[in-house]
Image (cartoon, rainbow, N blue to C red; front, side):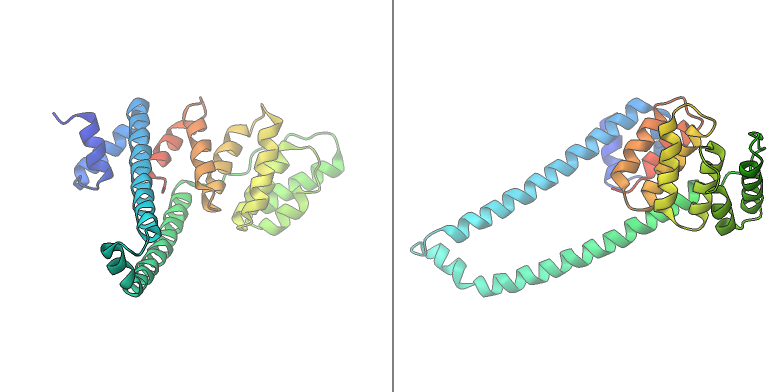
Length: 245
């Protein structure tokens, strides 16, 4: 039977067939120890590549700093123009690759967001005794339920210190693609601590970090959720396997 390290390497190198790939990703979702080993192996591989690139650059710098008396160095510097052209071509290729990588990662993040984001239905409202606030809350929830998100934001923002109003304001912002405003609202709920919507707020907040490009912060948030007793811990484990670098 193939060792765990060999399977991880095969997965990282893209050498698994579709059946093996699906089975291995399911194991990563279910086995936290395996997932931890996978993460470590990936980080080590990245560090090795970075170190190799640095050594090559240092070697070139040392060669160019050598005195011209050395015939080999003279020949090397004589061809500096050719090297500059080659470097320009390589630089262009790196930039093009970076652009493609950025676009690919953006698309991947968008796809993950769309796959895991699901708006919450409106919940039953408990009246507070403040008729004006209750009126804005009820009308705001009705507007949210009718997908009139601009109206929902306008009404729900009139309700002070109400976690339900804050939560559905945040969701309305998400539907309007105002992700920064939505994230601020979810963070407000999270900071309040133990409340009806805190697990949902943490989950949506992590998804928003993903869509606005804060991939590393999203990764850390999903790790925290996957290690918690949250309703979303399994989903968090699944999305961690699929996150772009």
